[in-house]
Length: 399
Image (cartoon, rainbow, N blue to C red; front, side, top):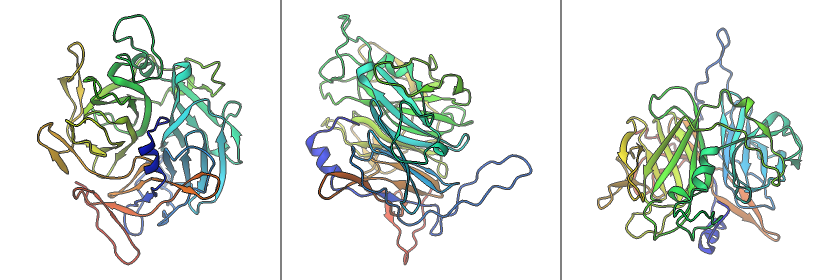
């Protein structure tokens, strides 16, 4: 998220990027093609990909167009497109707010990202047409490469007057306002419906303010949207002074995962088609009564259960997502998790392999960079990933 303590920023400056692929050779996932057409071969992801150095904010997320061999990188107020050798193809600048996590939609071939404009009380799914990102410094507001869809549910929770004083207190944690402690959005991913496990949904995770005195901000909140008919909602990026309000009235599903408060919610969210689980990479929370893990995994094999949401000012029931019962376990809270990177980018490639992104910096004028290295999910504790080298193949664990 755009807000960071000095300690978290220091951690950002020493991090690196991780890439995991499906096997040592990188077997691609299957893609549905129209009848009569064979699925094309995907380029094999290399063992490392560099984003280049950019004078912008730290790395927020990545998306991979594996069919065409392009990587998209979010640097807070800059989107960069590279090939898989790290050569810059194009970039988009001039966002009126904070660009967060990214996700590639295999169904329409576009990149989706979370976009926050809190000064305008506006939160969007930003949608990028990668085919139009073919030169550097394309302006987001005036280019046809970017469209946006307004997320009314997020705004409703962000602006909620929880103490009933009739005053919106703004972008601050120092208030009882903001339902569930909602500070906006960040993590995004495509995956199946949580209840019926069918179709592909855009899943958007809330950011949450750090407020250790609150008890109603201990759930991750995830919204699911069917984006197949979103074209009629889409509007140009526009300027911050004139934000549009075109978007669905409600999400297709609203879900909660009890993890304890984390620092600005889910930074990177990803669905793993190999295990059918959802990974939530976070900046650690600071409430001492919680284990404060940096990675939580939603068990995709178990449906959400309607349950009383803990800590709410008035009794409230919601659909509670189960955490995978593996990894580290905190008996006092019943919470499972792991210690892992991935807060700066997370992409599942199938077969137990992923891209995980961490930020780095270049010398002289501070520029932020990213780099990708192969890792594999093992599920071991406390850290569930193991680095893959050319001389040592590691078999992934899909559980």
